[in-house]
Amino acid sequence: MVQYADADDFLASQTPEIRQLLSYVRQLVMVAHPKMRERFMYSSTLFFMCQDYVCYFGKIHKTQGVEICFVKGFLLKDEAGVLESKGRKIIRGMTFQNLKDFQAREDAFLEVLQEAILLNETQPEKTFAKIMFERRKK
Image 1 (spheres, rainbow, N blue to C red):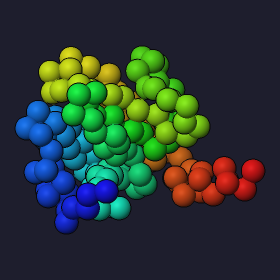
Image 2 (image 1 turned 135 degrees about the vertical axis):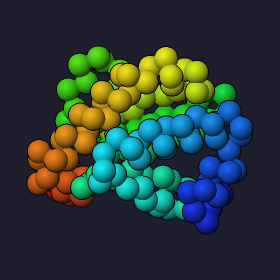
Image 3 (image 1 turned 120 degrees about the vertical axis):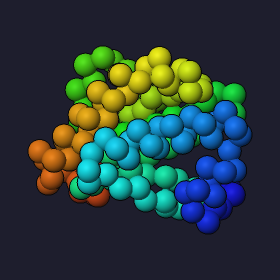
């Protein structure tokens, strides 16, 4: 597995089309809330946090696109029905082929993003760490 020094190194290593998409989404997420922060972890994953984890850049595939994953996706209402579970119990995501595809569904993405941020603000006791620990105890 390739390891990157930081988020910028990670983005620079992507194909131009994927880099354009990731950079656009990164900028959009970072201005979604004044307390939004990014955290580059595991030498290959860019997480976005607002009081707790909100989302991250998941699988990146040159031909199948980029999945943006919401760490507490199973708690989101997802009224537009845009989130995919892909067999996962907690995380839900949206996959985008390129920037044009993202821009066509940007409003739906922003709605989910705002719901995820609101969840962290209104239910601070439901941290991702606690959810994972509770799941493992079962």
